Amino acid sequence: MMTSFSHLISDIAVLTRRNLIKYFRLPQLLIFNATLNVVLLLLFNYVFGGAIKTGGVSYIQYFLPGFLAQIVVFGSTQTSVGIAEDLTKGFVDRFRSLPMARPAFLTGRVLSDAVRYVFLLILLVIVGLVMGFRFDNGFLSIIAGLALIVLFGVALTWVGVFIGISVKDVETAQVAGFVWVFPLVFASSLYVPIATMPGWLQAFAKINPVTSMADVTRVLLLGGSVASSLWKILAWDFGLIALFMSLAFRRYNRMA
Image (cartoon, rainbow, N blue to C red; front, side, top):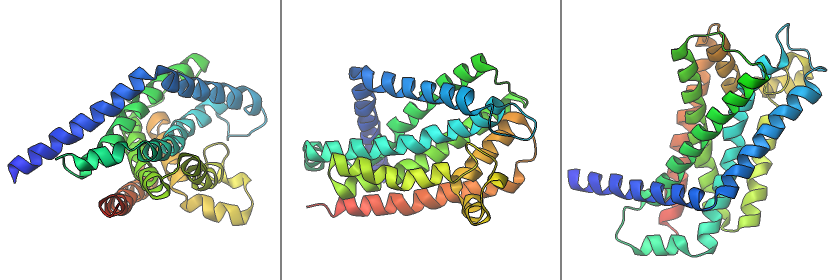
């Protein structure tokens, strides 16, 4: 059993390294992704910030914690595209023909994406500090907030993995990824307070996992009581991981 477990860990490490090397060999992908997020942060803050009321705090203080959560939400769409691309190019069939642990391919992809999230989060925090964002909480709370965002990203990445391995086509994977992402992002507290929304939309926004993630991040980075939203986001995280990890592995094992 220990030998099998060590082989599994070794295979996952190899596949994680493979995906990270791919990022380094195609630096333009990571550079343009980072540039896009920086541009979005600048535009939302300086274009919409003056028109959106956020309860007496500057818009950058309100917006940046939610924007950090948004990074991992949209990042899951890249996972769908990456998995579908490996399928269409035949890499998955090659991996399946090798004497390697079956969970290694999908798990390695998720872990490499988690590393990508860490890089983007650090970059956007630095940009936010230059723009005037300030932390109002302790160092451990800040680290906990960023760690929760990465965990949320891992949960949504498993959703992206399942989509990518189900559609098997790059263009379809890209569209399918955005179909479920856009309602979650824009019908949440990422950009505006929920109280400004119509009543019927508030009902959805309050149970939206992206709202829970944004609220917890704001509390951990800016101060306040975290208990009300922490259990919600943890339940969403582990529920999504358990569900879509099992679905993805089941789909992967049944591939012809």
